[in-house]
Length: 160
Image 1 (cartoon, rainbow, N blue to C red):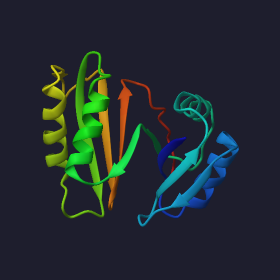
Image 2: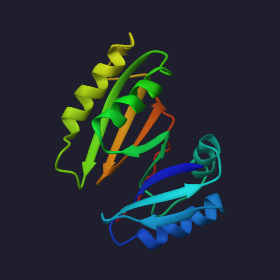
Image 3: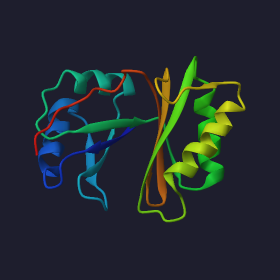
Image 4: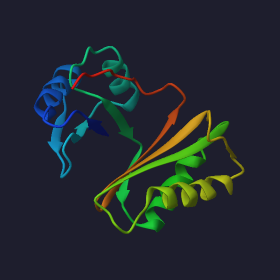
């Protein structure tokens, strides 16, 4: 099961849902408490999701992040997930976080704390041009984490 965070221009969520259904075929998409932010679940493996969407001509999808882990937004769970994902890093890394709907966590603090966990594994930090980026997306009480290689995520240009 792959869980994917999808962003779209506010008001274009319906179009993005249709595009995800066309591109992935077997997918369940639901809205979130934030305009322009959707969560999708599909039985397809992560690599196939990325390949299908990379080759899909979208009019509404701006960004997508397939999560490797989807955990509660608590430090012990975040650190455990970062440790597991950090083990897979071969080269340099950076941590990038975005926080929505959670006043107890800050993006900067997440980047520093989870970065330290990975540095303790002997991995090298490179904030400018890392080989890997640990993306952390806090959505209220839940958090998705994704370890992506440079250039792995497709980029889309959507006009609002």
